[in-house]
Image 1 (cartoon, rainbow, N blue to C red):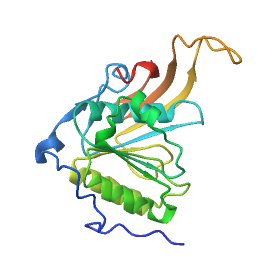
Image 2 (image 1 turned 90 degrees about the horizontal axis):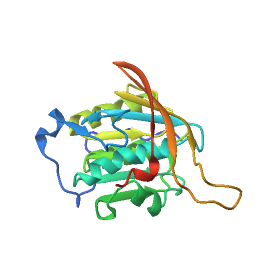
Image 3 (image 1 turned 30 degrees about the vertical axis):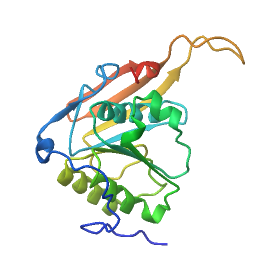
Length: 210
């Protein structure tokens, strides 16, 4: 089945979500202090790509950015094609449930359409892409995010421009044994690639919701 092209004004745009300040596109959004060594701020109207092997912490990094937006009183949304994103993960990232919309089990041929509609109504969208995203659809979503001063965080391969690219390189959960122990700390190692260069840092996912 061929992908559905993104219309200029999606018919299923969320109508119940509040509109944002039209001057928002000119502002940087500061992120949580726990991720500041890696990403001190992100620009509204841009795309951030977060990638990593399963279990490396890519979802944790993406939700950390969404948590920063939610703590600022704005709406966020997540596109969860396989229905694996739970409420506990959202809460631990500091995402307010009353300002969060989760769209589950999105067919691959409608993924781009759903993401475009959400970008019209919320400040940040975290979207897990299908295995193959058309480059033309990706470019349209880059334009949609810019036009709406919204932020798109894609957790997977992305065939288009991105202002930031985060690569989760692994996580450590010291204190846990084989069915025993107490978790006392955690770190997710990540690499940031941007127009300014590359740098690495470690964050504490247990403190993201603080």
